Image (cartoon, rainbow, N blue to C red; front, side, top):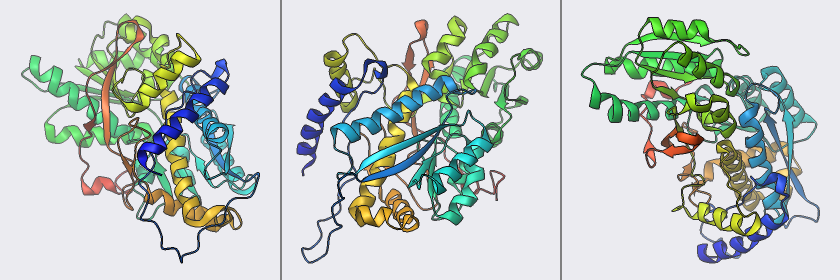
Length: 449
């Protein structure tokens, strides 16, 4: 099938999914999928994998935060995951005729619960792979997954992404430090240097969790050669409801900019505490869930101007083919509805990349090859993930390609900020993240073995 005919066929099928999905899941818009380019056709004498039997399915396990500190974005992420899976199953007939069974467990951003979910997916559900949620859980699961031979994915976790060659972990978007570093570089070049003749004094305030400590370490390494001083480097315990002491420290040190990674539930508290104490400085978030609609709503007018990034295209990117499809389908299916939940697109992209790997694996070994011996099937799934090359989900993502020693899918983001009325303003097109040194591309540098 040519790319042109593939897109025409998919467009017709996508129209059907919007007519079928319930209004409560209006977020489940379904752009066409741009697959990895097919390898050269095999010679006729080579045997092809047998077709899947009726009722064939593949299980994918997913950890979600539906009730914990990241639930504001977790609900949207889960909706995006579910929408993509339903689209594939009901309107595309599955992957090569194989339906996908997405088993979701609410782990509430609890590392122990997520590790337990991994063991359930591995042993009870016999899942082909797992979609992780938190960085800490991904790091805890990685050694087990390597022994078990099971692929797991996550938003970003450098200590696992750079865990040696031929790993079993695949990031689904650039690392949090990639996005935060790009956003800071844009602010420094485009706003600070135009109005100041000295280096900015930086405050770092991050969640006291693996991801927060990694972001702190990254910015210490990034800013030192730039001769930019870090005057505050603090960590917030999970679950706090008062940031007064942290804001006071930022104020006392006369910081010029705050770089932060915090849970969804803390952002409204933090920005309002800053306003109350008169700390009116730019804020840059290394975690783009700050751009989730519920988080923006919690911050209110005090959140206007917060800078972060987007690792995917969204509703207002009307020049992107996938967005054109989404907008036209919304007019037909749910007039007046706009999908502006930022993290919905992450959930959609997560499953799009995952199922691109499943598609390649099915083409390589067939349904029986993935399911009869689940250990061999999981190994085939890992091989398939490394074969993804140029997948974009019709322009929603930069081209995805994993390497054996750098399992980031791509390293480009778009810098964005919260605008008036809670609208997201994209400040750049796709921008490359600051380069990492060879030492930073090892899990040892990130403090993991």
